Length: 291
Image (cartoon, rainbow, N blue to C red):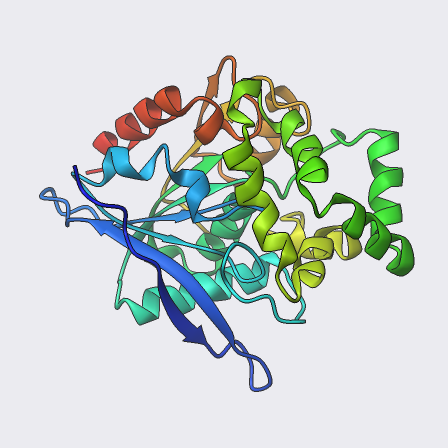
Protein backbone atom coordinates (compact mmCIF):
# COMPACT_ATOMS: atom_id res chain seq x y z
CA UNK A 1 0.00 0.00 0.00
CA UNK A 2 1.45 3.35 -1.01
CA UNK A 3 2.13 6.00 1.59
CA UNK A 4 0.16 9.23 1.70
CA UNK A 5 1.45 11.92 -0.67
CA UNK A 6 3.51 14.66 0.92
CA UNK A 7 2.47 18.28 1.06
CA UNK A 8 4.22 20.53 -1.42
CA UNK A 9 3.98 24.30 -1.80
CA UNK A 10 4.57 26.91 -4.47
CA UNK A 11 4.66 30.68 -4.17
CA UNK A 12 2.06 32.25 -6.42
CA UNK A 13 2.52 35.91 -7.37
CA UNK A 14 -1.15 36.59 -8.02
CA UNK A 15 -0.70 40.35 -8.49
CA UNK A 16 2.11 42.92 -8.22
CA UNK A 17 1.02 43.54 -4.61
CA UNK A 18 0.09 40.05 -3.43
CA UNK A 19 1.58 36.60 -3.27
CA UNK A 20 0.37 33.43 -1.59
CA UNK A 21 1.88 30.11 -0.59
CA UNK A 22 -0.26 27.41 -2.18
CA UNK A 23 -0.40 23.84 -0.94
CA UNK A 24 -0.72 20.90 -3.31
CA UNK A 25 -0.10 17.15 -3.48
CA UNK A 26 0.71 14.81 -6.32
CA UNK A 27 0.46 11.05 -6.52
CA UNK A 28 -0.01 8.21 -8.96
CA UNK A 29 1.63 7.52 -12.30
CA UNK A 30 0.97 8.58 -15.87
CA UNK A 31 -1.96 6.78 -17.46
CA UNK A 32 -0.85 4.14 -19.98
CA UNK A 33 -3.70 5.17 -22.30
CA UNK A 34 -2.25 8.65 -22.59
CA UNK A 35 -4.94 10.44 -20.62
CA UNK A 36 -3.88 13.75 -19.08
CA UNK A 37 -3.59 13.95 -15.29
CA UNK A 38 -6.50 14.63 -12.96
CA UNK A 39 -6.63 17.80 -10.87
CA UNK A 40 -8.98 17.64 -7.86
CA UNK A 41 -10.42 20.92 -6.56
CA UNK A 42 -12.34 21.02 -3.28
CA UNK A 43 -15.42 23.02 -2.32
CA UNK A 44 -16.04 25.95 0.01
CA UNK A 45 -14.39 25.53 3.40
CA UNK A 46 -12.76 22.24 2.42
CA UNK A 47 -9.26 21.06 1.62
CA UNK A 48 -7.27 18.29 -0.11
CA UNK A 49 -8.16 15.82 2.65
CA UNK A 50 -11.83 15.96 1.68
CA UNK A 51 -10.85 13.78 -1.30
CA UNK A 52 -9.24 11.07 0.87
CA UNK A 53 -11.91 8.51 -0.11
CA UNK A 54 -11.42 9.18 -3.82
CA UNK A 55 -7.84 9.98 -4.81
CA UNK A 56 -6.34 6.67 -3.56
CA UNK A 57 -8.87 4.76 -5.67
CA UNK A 58 -7.45 6.27 -8.87
CA UNK A 59 -3.77 6.69 -8.01
CA UNK A 60 -2.86 3.27 -9.39
CA UNK A 61 -3.91 4.24 -12.91
CA UNK A 62 -3.61 8.00 -13.16
CA UNK A 63 -1.30 10.87 -12.37
CA UNK A 64 -3.21 12.95 -9.85
CA UNK A 65 -2.82 16.43 -8.44
CA UNK A 66 -4.89 18.16 -5.77
CA UNK A 67 -4.71 21.74 -4.50
CA UNK A 68 -5.96 23.76 -1.59
CA UNK A 69 -7.60 26.79 -3.16
CA UNK A 70 -6.19 30.13 -2.07
CA UNK A 71 -7.85 31.16 1.20
CA UNK A 72 -8.68 27.59 2.22
CA UNK A 73 -7.06 24.49 3.66
CA UNK A 74 -3.36 25.05 4.27
CA UNK A 75 -2.93 27.57 1.48
CA UNK A 76 -2.34 31.15 2.56
CA UNK A 77 -5.28 33.45 3.11
CA UNK A 78 -4.31 36.96 1.98
CA UNK A 79 -6.68 39.92 2.06
CA UNK A 80 -7.54 39.91 -1.65
CA UNK A 81 -10.74 39.83 -3.68
CA UNK A 82 -11.75 36.16 -3.74
CA UNK A 83 -13.74 35.02 -6.75
CA UNK A 84 -14.16 32.24 -9.29
CA UNK A 85 -11.88 34.29 -11.54
CA UNK A 86 -9.16 34.13 -8.88
CA UNK A 87 -9.53 30.35 -8.58
CA UNK A 88 -9.33 30.02 -12.37
CA UNK A 89 -6.11 32.06 -12.30
CA UNK A 90 -4.76 29.69 -9.65
CA UNK A 91 -5.51 26.69 -11.90
CA UNK A 92 -3.67 28.41 -14.75
CA UNK A 93 -0.68 29.17 -12.51
CA UNK A 94 -0.54 25.54 -11.36
CA UNK A 95 -0.68 24.12 -14.89
CA UNK A 96 2.14 26.49 -15.83
CA UNK A 97 4.15 25.40 -12.78
CA UNK A 98 3.79 21.69 -13.62
CA UNK A 99 4.15 22.26 -17.38
CA UNK A 100 0.81 20.59 -18.10
CA UNK A 101 -0.69 21.12 -21.54
CA UNK A 102 -4.01 19.50 -20.68
CA UNK A 103 -5.84 18.29 -17.60
CA UNK A 104 -9.03 16.58 -16.43
CA UNK A 105 -10.65 18.79 -13.78
CA UNK A 106 -12.59 17.11 -10.98
CA UNK A 107 -14.28 19.81 -8.92
CA UNK A 108 -16.72 19.76 -6.02
CA UNK A 109 -19.13 22.62 -5.26
CA UNK A 110 -17.16 25.90 -5.39
CA UNK A 111 -14.19 24.00 -6.88
CA UNK A 112 -16.56 22.79 -9.61
CA UNK A 113 -17.67 26.35 -10.33
CA UNK A 114 -14.04 27.47 -10.52
CA UNK A 115 -13.33 24.57 -12.89
CA UNK A 116 -16.14 25.64 -15.23
CA UNK A 117 -14.89 29.23 -15.16
CA UNK A 118 -11.39 28.07 -16.10
CA UNK A 119 -12.67 25.75 -18.85
CA UNK A 120 -14.65 28.66 -20.30
CA UNK A 121 -11.53 30.86 -20.37
CA UNK A 122 -9.06 28.18 -21.51
CA UNK A 123 -11.07 25.39 -23.18
CA UNK A 124 -8.01 24.06 -24.99
CA UNK A 125 -6.38 23.16 -21.64
CA UNK A 126 -9.24 20.97 -20.37
CA UNK A 127 -9.76 17.42 -21.64
CA UNK A 128 -12.80 16.83 -19.45
CA UNK A 129 -14.86 18.39 -16.65
CA UNK A 130 -16.22 16.18 -13.89
CA UNK A 131 -18.42 18.25 -11.60
CA UNK A 132 -19.66 17.01 -8.23
CA UNK A 133 -22.66 19.06 -7.02
CA UNK A 134 -21.12 22.26 -8.46
CA UNK A 135 -22.16 25.67 -7.19
CA UNK A 136 -22.34 28.87 -9.21
CA UNK A 137 -25.88 28.55 -10.58
CA UNK A 138 -28.76 28.57 -8.14
CA UNK A 139 -32.01 29.20 -9.99
CA UNK A 140 -34.70 29.80 -7.38
CA UNK A 141 -33.35 27.21 -4.95
CA UNK A 142 -32.45 29.64 -2.13
CA UNK A 143 -35.39 30.20 0.19
CA UNK A 144 -36.24 33.49 1.91
CA UNK A 145 -34.58 32.67 5.23
CA UNK A 146 -31.34 31.68 3.49
CA UNK A 147 -31.31 35.00 1.62
CA UNK A 148 -31.79 36.89 4.89
CA UNK A 149 -28.97 34.93 6.54
CA UNK A 150 -26.56 35.63 3.67
CA UNK A 151 -27.48 39.28 3.85
CA UNK A 152 -26.58 39.37 7.54
CA UNK A 153 -23.29 37.53 7.00
CA UNK A 154 -22.44 40.02 4.27
CA UNK A 155 -22.77 43.02 6.56
CA UNK A 156 -19.38 44.07 7.99
CA UNK A 157 -20.05 43.93 11.74
CA UNK A 158 -22.54 41.05 11.86
CA UNK A 159 -20.40 38.97 9.50
CA UNK A 160 -17.42 39.11 11.87
CA UNK A 161 -19.58 38.17 14.86
CA UNK A 162 -21.12 35.21 13.02
CA UNK A 163 -17.71 34.07 11.79
CA UNK A 164 -16.39 34.02 15.35
CA UNK A 165 -19.46 32.13 16.51
CA UNK A 166 -19.14 29.43 13.84
CA UNK A 167 -15.32 29.12 13.67
CA UNK A 168 -15.21 26.29 16.21
CA UNK A 169 -16.01 22.55 16.25
CA UNK A 170 -19.63 23.07 17.31
CA UNK A 171 -20.29 25.61 14.58
CA UNK A 172 -18.48 23.50 11.98
CA UNK A 173 -20.47 20.41 12.98
CA UNK A 174 -23.73 22.32 12.54
CA UNK A 175 -22.59 23.58 9.13
CA UNK A 176 -21.44 20.18 7.86
CA UNK A 177 -24.40 18.09 9.01
CA UNK A 178 -26.88 19.39 6.36
CA UNK A 179 -24.39 18.60 3.57
CA UNK A 180 -24.34 14.86 4.39
CA UNK A 181 -27.02 12.20 4.04
CA UNK A 182 -24.93 9.68 5.98
CA UNK A 183 -24.53 11.50 9.27
CA UNK A 184 -21.96 8.99 10.56
CA UNK A 185 -19.51 10.59 8.12
CA UNK A 186 -19.63 13.84 10.09
CA UNK A 187 -17.27 12.50 12.74
CA UNK A 188 -14.71 14.22 14.96
CA UNK A 189 -11.95 13.72 12.39
CA UNK A 190 -13.93 15.51 9.65
CA UNK A 191 -15.02 18.28 12.02
CA UNK A 192 -11.43 18.91 13.11
CA UNK A 193 -10.25 18.96 9.48
CA UNK A 194 -12.73 21.71 8.67
CA UNK A 195 -12.15 23.62 11.90
CA UNK A 196 -8.36 23.94 11.75
CA UNK A 197 -8.14 26.32 8.72
CA UNK A 198 -10.65 28.66 10.35
CA UNK A 199 -8.01 29.55 12.92
CA UNK A 200 -5.51 30.73 10.28
CA UNK A 201 -4.64 34.36 9.84
CA UNK A 202 -6.84 35.87 7.17
CA UNK A 203 -9.46 33.10 7.19
CA UNK A 204 -12.22 35.62 7.80
CA UNK A 205 -11.47 37.30 4.44
CA UNK A 206 -11.81 34.16 2.34
CA UNK A 207 -14.64 32.52 4.28
CA UNK A 208 -16.89 35.58 4.25
CA UNK A 209 -16.20 36.51 0.61
CA UNK A 210 -19.04 34.45 -0.97
CA UNK A 211 -21.64 36.13 1.24
CA UNK A 212 -20.15 39.61 0.98
CA UNK A 213 -19.74 39.51 -2.82
CA UNK A 214 -21.94 36.66 -4.06
CA UNK A 215 -21.76 37.95 -7.62
CA UNK A 216 -18.06 37.00 -7.68
CA UNK A 217 -18.97 33.33 -7.13
CA UNK A 218 -21.68 32.85 -9.72
CA UNK A 219 -21.56 31.74 -13.34
CA UNK A 220 -24.61 33.74 -14.40
CA UNK A 221 -22.60 36.08 -16.62
CA UNK A 222 -21.11 33.31 -18.77
CA UNK A 223 -22.59 32.72 -22.21
CA UNK A 224 -25.00 29.81 -22.48
CA UNK A 225 -23.62 27.54 -23.79
CA UNK A 226 -20.19 28.53 -22.53
CA UNK A 227 -17.02 28.38 -24.62
CA UNK A 228 -16.01 24.94 -23.35
CA UNK A 229 -17.31 22.25 -25.73
CA UNK A 230 -15.36 19.23 -24.48
CA UNK A 231 -16.47 16.27 -22.41
CA UNK A 232 -18.36 17.09 -19.23
CA UNK A 233 -20.29 15.20 -16.59
CA UNK A 234 -22.38 16.16 -13.56
CA UNK A 235 -22.53 13.84 -10.54
CA UNK A 236 -25.16 14.88 -8.00
CA UNK A 237 -26.33 13.72 -4.61
CA UNK A 238 -30.09 13.18 -4.75
CA UNK A 239 -30.58 14.52 -1.22
CA UNK A 240 -28.81 17.86 -1.72
CA UNK A 241 -31.33 20.27 -0.22
CA UNK A 242 -29.20 23.39 -0.80
CA UNK A 243 -28.70 22.66 -4.51
CA UNK A 244 -31.54 20.26 -5.39
CA UNK A 245 -30.70 18.37 -8.59
CA UNK A 246 -34.13 18.68 -10.22
CA UNK A 247 -33.81 22.49 -10.10
CA UNK A 248 -30.09 23.00 -10.61
CA UNK A 249 -29.04 20.39 -13.19
CA UNK A 250 -31.11 22.01 -15.99
CA UNK A 251 -29.32 25.31 -15.23
CA UNK A 252 -25.92 23.67 -15.72
CA UNK A 253 -27.02 21.85 -18.85
CA UNK A 254 -27.82 25.22 -20.42
CA UNK A 255 -24.21 26.17 -19.70
CA UNK A 256 -22.83 22.73 -20.68
CA UNK A 257 -25.37 21.04 -23.00
CA UNK A 258 -22.96 18.14 -23.55
CA UNK A 259 -22.87 17.25 -19.85
CA UNK A 260 -24.47 13.99 -18.84
CA UNK A 261 -26.05 14.02 -15.37
CA UNK A 262 -25.85 11.18 -12.88
CA UNK A 263 -27.89 11.36 -9.67
CA UNK A 264 -26.70 9.21 -6.79
CA UNK A 265 -29.31 8.17 -4.20
CA UNK A 266 -28.67 8.40 -0.47
CA UNK A 267 -26.10 11.16 -0.88
CA UNK A 268 -26.23 14.90 -0.26
CA UNK A 269 -24.05 17.87 -1.21
CA UNK A 270 -20.67 16.33 -0.30
CA UNK A 271 -21.37 13.37 -2.57
CA UNK A 272 -17.74 12.30 -3.08
CA UNK A 273 -17.25 11.84 0.68
CA UNK A 274 -20.86 11.00 1.56
CA UNK A 275 -21.12 8.11 -0.93
CA UNK A 276 -17.54 7.49 -2.08
CA UNK A 277 -18.09 4.04 -3.57
CA UNK A 278 -20.87 5.25 -5.87
CA UNK A 279 -18.96 8.41 -6.75
CA UNK A 280 -15.74 6.53 -7.52
CA UNK A 281 -17.59 4.03 -9.69
CA UNK A 282 -19.21 6.80 -11.70
CA UNK A 283 -15.93 8.73 -12.06
CA UNK A 284 -14.19 5.54 -13.18
CA UNK A 285 -16.83 5.01 -15.87
CA UNK A 286 -16.42 8.60 -17.05
CA UNK A 287 -12.64 8.27 -17.24
CA UNK A 288 -12.96 5.00 -19.17
CA UNK A 289 -15.13 6.80 -21.73
CA UNK A 290 -12.49 9.44 -22.42
CA UNK A 291 -10.44 8.33 -25.39
